[in-house]
Length: 496
Image (cartoon, rainbow, N blue to C red):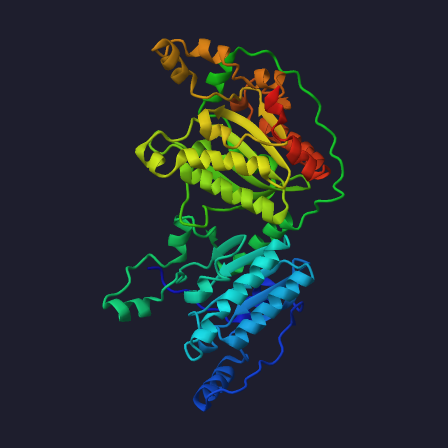
C-alpha cells in the first residue's frame, strides 16, 4: 500500500484551491440539544483540538474567478464522522448551491457514520444523497475530491456521486474500514485494494490528483461544464476541400495504417480544456474507449472516442467499453452537454468473455440511449468501422466522416468468408456493400466528408486540425438547434 499522504485540514485545502481571500462561510453554529454529557464533552474537545465546530465546513468562493460552492470534510473533528448536525450542514449547503445555480465541489474525508449517534446518524446518508441527486437533476456540476481516508457511509453516498471524481495519491478509499474488517474477520484486509490508485486502475474513479494540482483540474472541468450552451456564435463552415473518388479497397487499407491519427492526436491538436475521465465508475475500464470532457473552439462536449491505440488482437474492444460509453451518454444528459462520438474500431471482441459480459445487449442499449438522448449529438467516423461495436456509436444528429473512413457489418474479409468461403473477395465485398464514407454520404447517412491530403497518416496534425474545425462548426450549429426537434429526426436518415 502507498504511504498515507499528509492530511491537509479543511481550511488548508480551501486556501490551496480557491482564489486568495475569496472564501465565505455558509455555516451557522450547530444545534446540540439533548446530548449525553459524555458525548457533549467529546464534541467540545473535538472542537477545541480541530478549531472547527463540526466535521464539515461549507461555503463559497472563487476558483480562477468562477463562483463555486464547496463542502469539505475535517478529519480532525471526530475523524470526519457524519452525525445529524454535520448532515444538516451538508444538506443545507447542497440545497443552497442548487437554488443559486452554483457548481458544487465536495472534498470528503471521513471514517463514515458517527458511532456515538448510531442509526439516526447512519440514515442521514439518504438525505445527503437525495440533495446531491436534486443538484445533479438541476443540471449543475458536482465534482468530488476524495481524501485520505474516505470510507463507510460517506464513500457510499456523497463521495461516490460525482460527475467527475478524483482522489489524492495514496489515499485509503473504500467502503469497509480496514480496522473494522480485521476486528470482524480476524485477519487484515488485503493491501493495495482500498487505495486511490487501485480504484483508478479499475475505472471506479477518474484519476489520482495531488492536492496542489486539483485547482487546475477543476478549472479545466468547469471550463467545459460551465461553457455557454445558449447564444453561441455561429462558426462559419470550413471551406470544402474536393474529395477524390478513392477506390473502396484503397480507403479500407489506408484506414488500417498504423500511423493513422486516432482520438488522442485529435484531442491534442484540435481540442482544448480536455479532462480525461476513466471507466464506468462501477468497476470497469476498457482501453478501447476514451472518455473526456472537452471543447472544440467555444463549444463544450462530452467526448467518447474508440481508441485505436487501446485495441489490440489480445484486447479488442469489449462490452466494458460500451458501458463506459453509456456513462458518457448519461453525463451528456445530466449536464445538458452535446455528445461527440468517434468510430474507429477493428470490431468488438468475439470471445467467451464478451458474450458473458453481455456485448449484444450493450450494443442495443447504446443504440437506444443515443436515439433517445435529450442532448445534441455529433458522430465522427474517423477510421475503421467494423460491425456492431462501430454501429453502437453511430446514431447522431450530424455525422461527419474522414475520407477513408468506412462502416461495415463485418470486416470485408469476414463478409467474403460468408459469401465466397474465402477471404480473397474482400475488396469486391467492400465495394458491393457500399462501406465507404463517400457511399454513405451519397445515401444521406453521412452529412459531411473531410478530405485527407492524400492520407491522414501522412499529415496527422493538419488533418486533425481540419477535422477539429468541422467539429467546432457542427457543434456550434447543434447548440443553436431545438433538441426535441433533433431527437425526433434522429433515425430518419436510415430510411433513405
